[in-house]
Image (cartoon, helix red, strand yellow):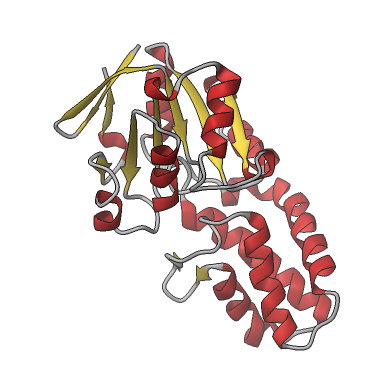
Amino acid sequence: MVRVAVNSDTIDNIELFVFDKDGTLIDLYTYWCNMIGLRAQGICSFYKLDVSEHKEKLMFDMGVDIRKKILRPEGPVGILPRAVVQKAAENYLTKLGCQDVFNICFRIFKEVDETSLSLLDKFIKPLDGAVELLKRIRQKGGKIAIATTDKTERAELAIKFLNIGNLIDLVVGADKIEQSKPAPDMLKLVGKTLGIDAIYSIMVGDAKTDIQMGINADFKGSIAVCSGITKKEELASLTPYVVDDIREIKIK
């Protein structure tokens, strides 16, 4: 069993740590700004839209505010499933009178998935201390899983790129369950697959939906990390375990 120290609190008897990916282990803005930028560029090219007029607006509707260099707190990207992000692009195009928007957006999103494989060094930047924390958990005998609104395959690629596959026991993306965050489906699947009860499990995430998912799954605790797009006071309203930086989580 692992003991976790969060500020002045201690959580004992933990076997399983479930981490969100983007914003918790990986820099949120770097990853999604690049992905959403490629998607918007592809959409503009297909429909012959003026890039200078429409790319930034498309990115904004999908959740990236490039002027402020942030992800929008309401998402959808980084918070809600891929289908919701795609729907935001479809809605933008529908207002312009574009045709066959579902099929075209689906195809472009898939093409960007493939294109980005050769650009992972520009997309994926681990947050300081994240890999070290994972290693410490493994040293103490803890199990580690990833629960993300991204596709499972995409998350596994990120883990492979970071060379931390040996530290991760299971990856669950939104494509593996019926209901995404904040529903408990991901965490229930993780617990069932690894054979670990919720009372011995902790969720670590940067968004309200991560913390709510941990609560809904009856996890022993949910640790909020203020490295994403959610304000500290919002996270503190859901859990007593809040840190500014993932390096503040200590494994005993």
